[in-house]
Length: 407
Image (tube, rainbow, N blue to C red; front, side):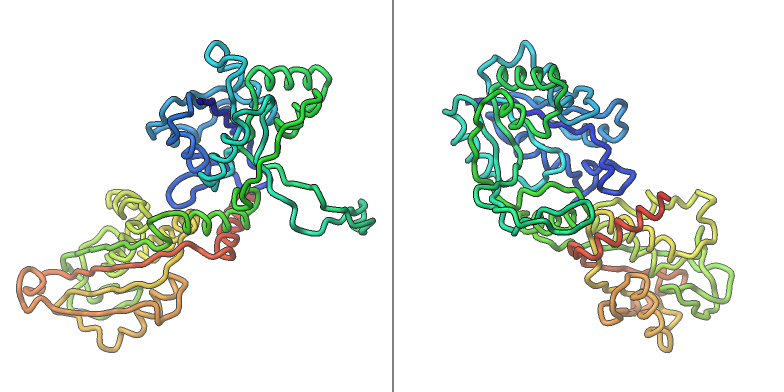
């Protein structure tokens, strides 16, 4: 068999509380819509994919940089059902009336492969088609406008509709057209078929096939995708930085002013410890390096404290659901010595990383008087950090911070 996929992605994500439409929020270095598209892009039975986008969507180009097989885009509508109908129209002349069409939400990044297989198997011989659904497990209460409980609703036979939903091309086109002609707007494809008198089949899906609506949903998706990924939930990054000595009477090390016979030649404050740390953070997050984000020929960074670079890197990591586990930093220099400053540097770095002091290790070594470091011509540092998927509270806090910045 083969099928076509339509993905409505024209929504603004207003309920998600962010200026960025939720389908473009990143998890583990990929946007939600990329995660949602992936099972179908990998499936050779998928004859083609149509993504319905908001008019002038400026974010899609980033997703389009990937080599998506058999994918085209179309302008979406003001409502989900209109976006789906526009996607169906884009298949005219390509899809036959009896072909299967699957519709999947762009904000459902955790579709298990087994669920897709079950849907195709159980609907493949059905005259109408059907949908993935999960049984309602919670007790349901019907409440009035004043938040008072009127009664408990019997949950027997109640199921939560999921996606993908799978219907015949001709039947779905006709059902949506009939709904629009009657002035009705279905909330999903199954409802449009129901209004015609058809009875879609219910296929049991996994409760992990969640739709991202809130920051809490995002945290759950992070955990689910971390568990499903063969790469695990940990990421490691390393960083290195070096500066030549120059005029001055102190050097900045880990945000601490350490007296010395020289200063360093640098565009910013020349803190090799924090520069190496920043590079390690960016590397672990797959975000390039410090030079890409804070160019040394940009006047904005002249003389600034390197702690700002670290905070910016951490903000980028939080947006991707990543948090610091620990950091190990080594200073390479004949001088200055760290005795008397090590604990202060450790505490300062831990504060920047928002971890306990015990999660930061500061070491120092020499090069046995070899090379430019041995000749006391400069100073260097290297750092290694470990990241993990952030807990729900951290993701919610990062989301709240983005909301605050938009007001």
